[in-house]
Image (cartoon, rainbow, N blue to C red; front, side):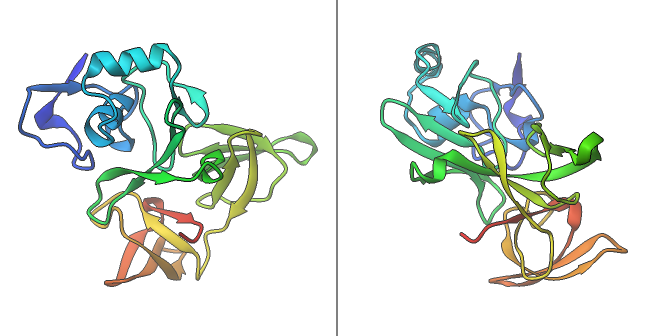
Length: 217
């Protein structure tokens, strides 16, 4: 299955003109990039699909420290891509223009990632089931609220800490017309579910559901 190039989401960093089709990702197209697009078109570590498939078969490409299964496997914001032969690591991020990008990071940084808390359910014995924006679920005793973010240790597969949605927190806009903008939360309007964010280019008002709190760059 393929996706028509004219139908690719605006946050994909590829031209709409060119071949008729591009690879269809394994999950929602607007929430990340297929690993084929990342390796061939973004990082240019492979020249074609055949090279990407070969690297995958040799388990030379990892997403969040786990081997990639298929060349259409989708990534999500802040996922970590590891190229085993070169020992290089990249984090999926957003540019100021709202396009997905892959930023090279250190090995130390590559064992951690941030994901947004979408839902939490209280279980027996004080445990909580935490559902995250990247599709992962954790059973944990950490205290958190919906719209906080979780810093995940990919090696231990545990939530290392919670980054609270609050005034003075750093944040990135993940959807909407301000996608990719980063700044500091000035004020949270819980009633209207809005947040005022101070960016280098001025203040913007964003729906909380379009915002993710992050650590300092």
